Length: 368
Image (cartoon, rainbow, N blue to C red):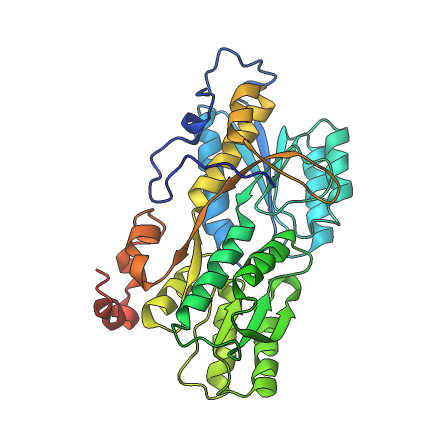
């Protein structure tokens, strides 16, 4: 994987992504060889609804950006796979049949969707992998630096144990779905920071990222290790962190160990405020979603220089090599930086976070 610096600041949404290309081109580049005008149709396929981000943030931002880039003449067609790979394949086949101009695909199962990606390719429809790297002849990929996500989680978990950390400290590791290639990258990044510093006593790969499975796994780990012997919990995302916390509380653990997360969901931010959850990974959805919209429109309009400027990274999938990509950076979200991340970027307001239930906790950490 080739990594280059991303020229956007996480705390500022005002910078146009197209303005940051190394070649300095804009959407009006005279070097463009348009194959399509502003009347573009972008198909958007999201993977599930368990994680609220896809429909609360990603798709609305993509929809708005496509309209902005096309003088409101372009439109988006949306479908959610609801964690069902077969259903998503059917949704994608309909978009191919309906002759959309380009597809943004966040795959339920990166392997199973490969043949449908090939169908799109054969129909002359570019496919840009969004958030998860699908297999098959993908034209481009936009996501976060997934190994860095895991590294941030692992490093912050180790830091949470303080100077008294010992290699005999036992942690539980709750990883994402084996069908999601991102999950393996998160795991690898986390292990690079955790291995040799603590003992991974129990580890689980959670099918479909299902929180109810994570809860059962956590309950099993508590029985195996003992409720007083868990130093920390690595959870790959916030939804699983929530149910892991439920399992610990139901087991009678009142002094919760540090637990990680990812996605900066509102409920997770509130748990961080109270101290129930130690951290999450903040990923700037506006940056990722706007980049995807720009890449999609540039691709179908034949603006090759702009497209190249937006895809200066490169990744390999199991089926294809050298896929043009943009990898957006991430940061650890803790009590210390809630205001400078999710609040500064307009993801949540202080009022949304600090409802009556959390007012005292917000006051205690001076979040106002």
